[in-house]
Image (cartoon, rainbow, N blue to C red; front, side, top):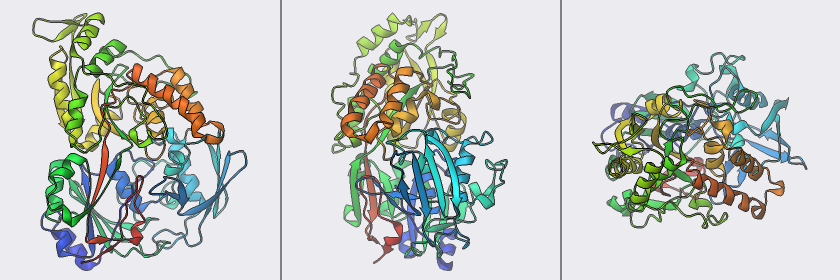
Length: 552
């Protein structure tokens, strides 16, 4: 989802002198202020980005070849137009006249190919390799034309590969990608292709962008965008009310607590995001990829706690998800999830036959007994001399994750699973815990973008069970699941009637195997101060930032 802005000299001075206090929105009408909640950005390079805060800023700096229609998610031309071959295997992208980098040099097809080649290079540890799994090649026809060939006609190509296949300034990197991971451009880009350019960043405090006068759609009306980093979601409402920020993403419970609602426009939609409890299926001390470079399965050392499905089922039934839905607000529409297909797609893919795991501590305890985990004298279960005591580290990026951790610690403790819960800063959590797969259990959220399989494919295909390069955080390997995921995204004609039964099977297996404990659905709330004019949010995106303005 996109949001944007820039600066004149006065705005620059104010941004520097008032980064954390004072109502910047009130003081300077040329500055639009957005919130980045939970932690700092990690990168501004789309090929390396994993976290929502980084991706939010990237949208202003490095837009895609297309944009998603805010209401339908269907691709609409942005930097390029395209044609598709009759067999659906070849996409020819033609860059629009006048698209250029902010320094005035043309964006060329080589920049598109560079992004793909970098992601696929062995020298680059890109978590976006899985997004490119369906792409066979990217070739340059001429400066304006890139030809993308896919391995199979793919129904989800726009939401994964093409959403990442954005031009990167190839002239700023070494041709052999040897500097790609460490290049200064990654965190302080000196050129951009979007409506804004990078101006300044103060780690842990703010990122400031200036309007790009060379943007092909015209310079934005708002001169400056300041992204203010807010460590705690609890302070977002205060920042909105004091006009330290104009915009925030939140959940219905936060909206209920927001005072002075008459000052804001709000938009509510089902969120294609699943907050998950991740139970690692492999040994967390020495995690390895589930497949080798040839794509063949590798035998993984089982996790001592969670390799038994009965234990995962016990966790899923051992704490109260209905209670968690109530923490999200009385009008949240939240329900316990059964798998990776979220309510954002329930109108198209009926998964109502799959029932969520009920809260049943007695049954959970019985399953643990059956799996050989017996209660010890101190109330903690033991099996083969191993206590069922483990660390649960997570980042407090979203209040819901904290709620889940608190409820789990209490209620799982009552059935003999002891969790030592601790919080971490987001970027440190990603780099040392989540992405290297160095955990036994954790809590995180995963968004699926505009594609129905955006969550399912990334989190459950065995090809993506690669530490620091894939999002299959559980190291789940199931050939039947791989087959269904591949078949559903390559269904001839991409007809909903043909794909729906496949996703129903995917949802059922994801539930029965407890690939993840899928917790509860969420509703996304976009809140914008009414001083920012001409803004419209849809289910999948906002209207272009260049249409926005700041008024009285």
